[in-house]
View: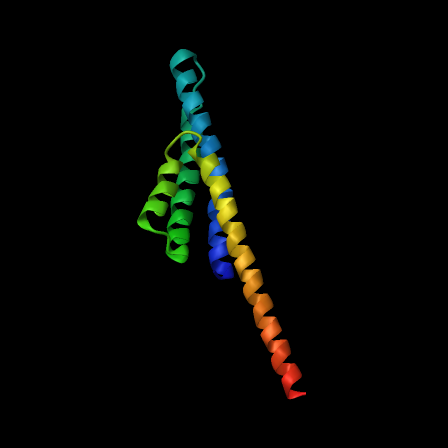
Length: 123
């Protein structure tokens, strides 16, 4: 994986937890709206909507760059519409992003070693 793929995974991971929190807060606000005079649904709805749109855009970018299978991509999308799913997605994406970063570092290290070996051979 390249650095752009790792960045796409990181963006998706960074928006998944706030999106999950906003979803839970929207659910709480919906209950409070029906049981009290407190109505924060318009504000939380707009915030959650913005975060959800960002999640979907970042999810599409990550799917495109990582070449996930349809099942894996569907899992990450489904986690965005299930309460607490965003927290699970964040954890899984963190592992996947760390693997991508490790792969980039390893590839660069191999490239540098190959370059050092070639430089030593010409000397």
